[in-house]
Image 1 (cartoon, rainbow, N blue to C red):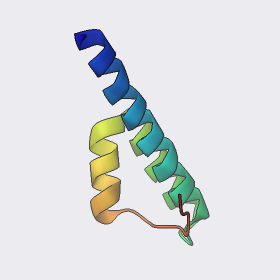
Image 2 (image 1 turned 90 degrees about the vertical axis):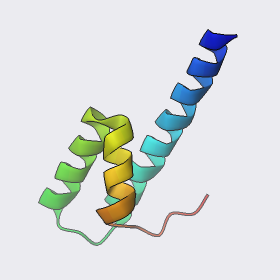
Image 3 (image 1 turned 135 degrees about the vertical axis):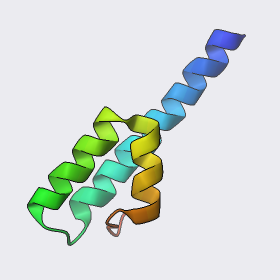
Image 4 (image 1 turned 30 degrees about the vertical axis):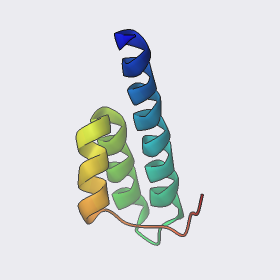
Length: 63
């Protein structure tokens, strides 16, 4: 049961990271800034996602 829950949490974090990366790519920020944000999100998935949610560039992606 525990491994299933952990796998589900990991899948949710992966989906949110992909959504954040798509938002960064679609934003109006400069290319260098986009690359830095994407690296932050990829290298630090949870912390990068939180930092991006608070301060990152936003695109116009809707789910």
